[in-house]
Image (tube, rainbow, N blue to C red):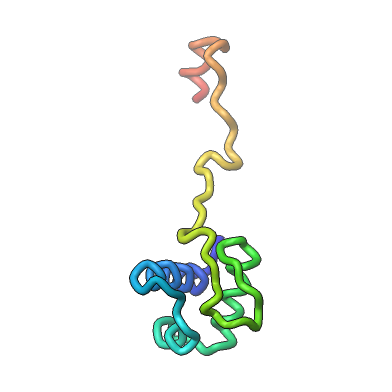
Length: 97
């Protein structure tokens, strides 16, 4: 799960590229995020680590390649017990679940 600043940066990159057909420069990212270069680079590295973008640290941000433009959603059933199958007793299903 992404932090707010990484989610915001990912959306900025995606939307900027959609409109301008190029990635924003660092000055543009600073203006749009309100962050400094170091915090933007940390957020970019998190996006790389989570496989949302391809980017080599230290290279220009214009070389970023977006792999996924939205944060991945967790499965709502993750960690929950599955419902019993239809082969189990019908009355047990209605009384226990």
